[in-house]
Image (cartoon, rainbow, N blue to C red):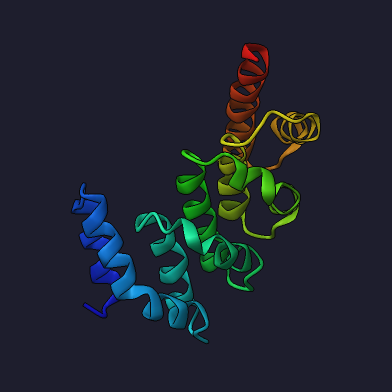
Length: 162
């Protein structure tokens, strides 16, 4: 199977880790090629596939996706980062400054919201809490304010439980 979109759809149906690992091996080269494509849609698919395939070995590729010129590709990379960081919170901590920048400065509102949502899987550091509190109060977009407030509360709860 060389079609990356097919592989992503198939991955959603797989519970068997061995079958998923086989699928990852099968599409590895296609995923890398798609991430280097000139077409933003192919790059977005590649970044989204990393999370869907639970491809933890491709976190460096995701970091590149966070810097992509296309909002669709950045958003896809963020969705995969959020998905993978549920089991590995260190992923969020490793790219925290980039997530802060995206949440605060990205020109695309959806990218800012997804960056905020990804921050919930990291550790409740003071700079993140400060940024989220600021966004919850000052962001122009109501959806971003609401997301920031929700994630801020979740991280404060996580900090209190420590």
